[in-house]
Image (cartoon, rainbow, N blue to C red):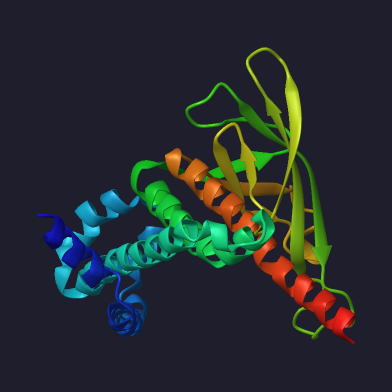
Length: 274
């Protein structure tokens, strides 16, 4: 039994297997690219539907179109298992040889690339968890004079202020006067009358009490539309995947910090040599 487990471990801890899986994922995505563009009505709902819901309602009913997505999941899971086993095997060897390192810093520097590998895997697991068992609330419209309930919570959201940055006169003519970015200050009120202001921007979501708030749309989108009533549209996500995702980011920061330290040490060593 032990020998069988060891053979399975050695099979999974194989660089050739990793290369094969990477090629399979790449080929799968290439095929999927054409299906995705050819059948947008089937795949675009993935942007707002949970993965199990999309599979039940659309994917299984259109297997001739969505088959590549299931093979993609299979290859990605297999690649994740391969990466986990390879990384764990390497980390085990490094820990076993801990006494060979002169100090803890050198040990952490040696360990740092593998911590980054773990972090990427944790981030991917967090994202998969978020779209599988979490909740995804779309089209939450916030205005200056009205409140919207934060789904599944006692909190209420209201747009406090919206600052829009526009392209200036130095931009291309077709872009001049159009919005380039927006910053929204949102007032969060609880049932006891306590309020707090949070800030959102494009590609900078806000994490609040287990919720991830994403800025999707806003008005005005140009200088000409500034007279219209401003509003923002939010996507609100929640679920255990958020904490897993944040844990992966934290581990990634730790790993990359120690990884970059080695370059500082190399530079100092060269300067001393000179």
